[in-house]
Image (cartoon, rainbow, N blue to C red; front, side, top):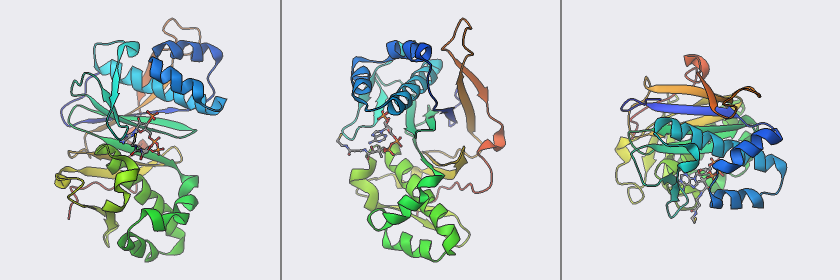
Length: 266
Ligand SMILES: CC(C)(COP(=O)(O)OP(=O)(O)OC[C@H]1O[C@@H](n2cnc3c(N)ncnc32)[C@H](O)[C@@H]1OP(=O)(O)O)[C@@H](O)C(=O)NCCC(=O)NCCS
């Protein structure tokens, strides 16, 4: 699978209950560290989520490299962001819930992705004082009440996707990053230069996919350069049973309605 220069590929897959046969086929792809993590997960749901996400990442990345999924090695930065080791220019980031796993891939710089179920909007509203700046909260409350939960979820996923793109995660950066919506409903990114000296490189969008809010972040303009694929296992009984069966999603699956993309730095 070829990714053009300054192109983003977004892969998604449903998280569902794995058959024992499927689980047995995924486990050998994992590293010792991953198998260790898998063994410590508290219930079958979390274990499925973990295996499906690992499978998605390894098969997607290997489809872009001449390597087998099980041969891929990863390193984590000090905040836990994984990357391929040795690095080869292929960048990725993942996010998952109990329903959906996504993997964003690019050969043109670091990327970040976050998904949250729509049903989490009320939870985000409850913790907004700790996660959003005064300006973000002011702008949120200037909206009619019915629109606030969705805006809160958009803010949350945008912040997380950005912090994942730069690799520092939530602990270090939540209060240093603002997404301020203008009067046309377009978000603008404002960042404390102490945490990111190259703020003007980022482009982003936030939209909906499969009952989730999703935010994507990349250091290049990708509006017309994003391809979306669903990853599905081959039907049981076929020879390559756990090779990814991919098909390209219709363009309107994600790029619809409420999409914003912007160089967007104040
Ligand atoms: C990264 C983070 C925002 C993810 O939050 P989340 O909503 O629970 O999870 P998501 O499903 O969206 O993403 C999880 C994936 O993001 C990736 N990830 C982990 N840390 C990351 C980071 N700092 N930056 C970018 N991506 C990261 C991982 O691939 C992870 O999946 P995995 O654990 O199965 O490998 C959160 O875990 C965080 O803030 N981590 C940083 C914590 C920290 O500072 N640690 C320092 C000591 S290790």
